[in-house]
Amino acid sequence: MKAIVRKQYGSVDELDIREVDRPEPGADDVLVRVKAFGLNRAEIYMRQGLWGEVAPISGIECVGTVVEDPAGELQAGQTVAALMGGMGRGIDGSYAEYVAPPRSNVIPIDTDLPWEVLAAVPESYATAWACLHQNIGIERCHSLLVRGGTSALGQAAINIAAARGIEVLGTTRQAERLSQLSRIGCTGTLVDTPELSHGIRESHPGGLDAVLDLVGNSTLLDSLKMVCKGGTVCTAGFLGGGDPIAFNPLVDLPSGVNLNFFASFMFGSPDFPLADIPLQHIVEQVEKGIYRCKPARVFGFDEIRQAHRLMESNGAGGKIVIVH
Image (cartoon, rainbow, N blue to C red):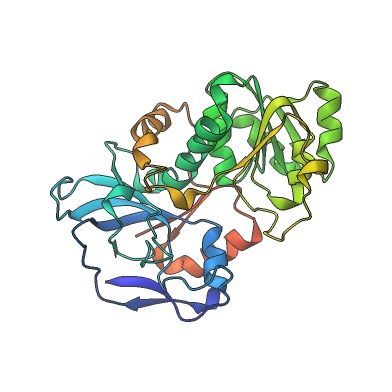
């Protein structure tokens, strides 16, 4: 099969298309024919060797069709989404014609969406759903700010929250993208700054119910100043980089404010079963146009270097998808 193989850790020039052996599924795996896959920022860090030793074939998500399920739970030809389960980390990932993830990380999907649109859903929407429903408790919220709103994950979170009818604020570092946030459901849009909390406290003196911070450590302390007593800050991204910060909870964590973190690599584990994420419902919301989900850019398999360059430049303004 054809696969995009990392020759060594480094730049996009280390990504090469090669012929490799097709993976053989174990008893608890599913062999999937990859039709399309979304790119994720984590794959930049993996390619660069910043996350330790990882598999030479990257890719943490995909959509495609079942080739073989040794347990017989999934039928050949069935449309599925696969995400995490060690793909691109401990086992070869979805940058290939075939992948063999654990069955616990493969979800059947009934849809007629084009492959490139379906591929924009799994990782972004599963993570957004978990952040909002499991970590934040969106059911109890009247106001939410998504910091890093024009990222693929940010757009997914805004779509999900806006569909509930609550006040959703979104930030971007680029003023020309403010209109994009409004189009996907934000009731308020802001250009992000290091001290955004000052303006938020002026417009919402009592504080917001929740902040989903996808920028990461560089904005976390400021995000904690935005929420009300009993409110929640969930951090689930690192758009601003992963450099550590000095954090003293006795000083930096306001009394009564909740802080938590969601790590999507836990999907499929006993504590975070993918069955808890209603991917079929999410896809149906996309089909109805309730969730405005479409890839920002689509590239061919042999254009992986160009796609990675765009992702590194932050120039896409949403999900980048690769199709076979």
